[in-house]
Length: 348
Image 1 (tube, rainbow, N blue to C red):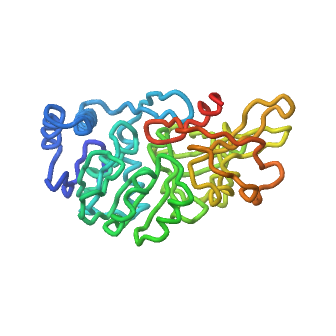
Image 2: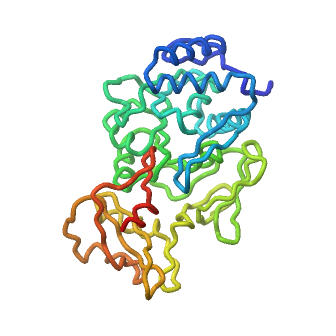
């Protein structure tokens, strides 16, 4: 079998219903840049970057864990990632896909790469919070962020497989997605891993690895990803995990969110999991400076002050109970909808 490279465009690839080869795509890109809306211009820009003479492309990180930065990436590694996604989700040439993410970040760029590498028949729409509105087309494969999935529950009858990434899925969204017939997967990944390296069906605990990925843990119990087709060096994450076996792991939380309260280390994400059925607004727990404990655990809820009765904390262990509750009218977010925990905690 001939090796698929970044110069390939699959002969079954279609964009908005039209069969396009590499030359056609470049022509369309010029039109999008010249005459298109803002989101269409960014698609055109990316496609022209992809089909230029360079073997690499510059990607911007989302800035969840620090200032957004630019990462230079080989186009071939993005092709390898697209092929792994195709294998894992059993995508076939000619499958119908919807592209509704911003092209600025890796998740959006990769949907385009998957489409012309795997030969998908892809439609693009503006990256809005209601991507399936007024659209009755049936899709085999769609990628969304949680907010889009939340607003598209009624349209899920037309979607066979959905991947959700970019930010953590709330418990209530998970419950809603368990009721639809769509096969829904939560993905795990970051810009450095060229989007997802693992996925899990909604409702399951453990993430399963995509092909050609190995994992281990470092001394801090953080996940280390060995993906030779995607990154020359192992990728060391800040994510605390429990490794089940060579192919599965459970995400526990981020090491940089851990609260050290009086010498007891608390993982906010684990506490949030327990509280998720009790609090119906957006919320998170975190640590703020405290003279006695070093850090004290607090609960931060988005919105105006509702009545929080004692029942809310019954399911928590002694040390997991927040010492204080704060209300913030509107959470600060990154562009792709992740809560800026650190900034919010500093403002309290």
